[in-house]
Length: 227
Image 1 (spheres, rainbow, N blue to C red):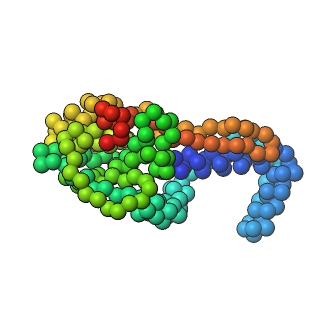
Image 2: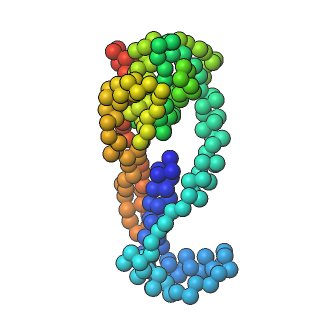
Image 3: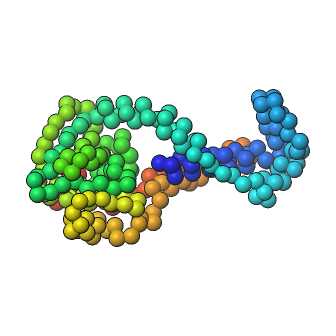
């Protein structure tokens, strides 16, 4: 999420700088607004600012601040979405258990769709709670339920959790981890970014920016349904 938010801000500010430096009048207007809003004086001409931007003389550094603000701003919305969905606590059999990874909230889309996201119809989200329990979140809302699942279900969920990891997959049994890593194809870190940013339109007056969440490896029941 930090990588996504930082990239989002980087692209947005870079585009804002490009639009501001289209001509001296626009840049001077931006300088005037900045001085009026902050009370700080900019002792650089609009022409010099434009030249610096166009030759890459201004280096953009995104700090942790946008990410932290984003997390706090969106926390309540995410909480409301999760609380308003269907909760099913899955219980593993005595001889099996759920693993954990460094990106444990695993969103699995319906088989065959290219759209990935919590609100996409048919999506299932897994959140491992403990060795013997995993939260399964779906939409629309219904009451909280508990269900004991078989070994096959646990293995498929573990493969989805492992495939969603970035660097680390954790569990108490080495042989089990080796099996999950092998079946999920996680012998090496995933080289595909979680999100791809793209530009559909670009003029001196604006641009249309977009992004999409990228597919990872997903694992389904023999009938094609999400476990």
